[in-house]
Length: 253
Image (spheres, rainbow, N blue to C red):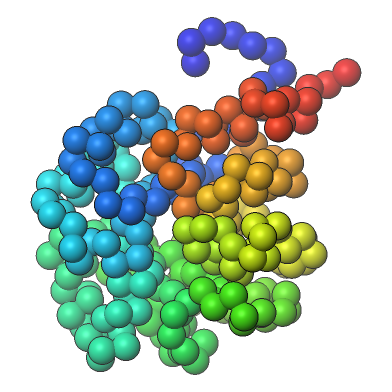
């Protein structure tokens, strides 16, 4: 930090297991990645190349190399995994991970129907090759999953070998964990946290109001994801109580 302030909450140090910021790259150019890393690298723990953008991204290997040079791991979005799986190309997906030197992968079923036992078996298989993040929740706003099922699926997927489980919200923050308005399904989140350790969950929270809510609920070291590159520094100030929304949250009287 550039200078000292009292009563700033402690942040975990990189490489973190808790307090993660997962950034979504929806198609940045190489130059944009360089600009983002100049200010955001210290506060970014992992980058997701959103949905299946890696399929159409020019200079993909060069982009991955830029992130690697900054010490930031990258993974392909879960929709790409689903695109391979639904076409019967799971083994091809594994070969793509090797071809691009990927060390992380996401297993999701937000756009397809998949039995939980099959999903867990795929997690177990991929966990022998890479570090697996698994996503729980549907991208269909009409599909409401009850809290007990979120908990059951998260527990199963962690036991199958997932490093973290991701709470689905899409890039807009208006499904899964949230209502169509972006409002947090508070009862769902609080019930999940009674059964699943907070450090094992990454909450997709692209909207500022959602980030504020999770910081106030869990603390400065909550894991949040689907953060836009240009919002990473802003999020860090929210975590530290240096933005109006959390200004009083960490102050002691």
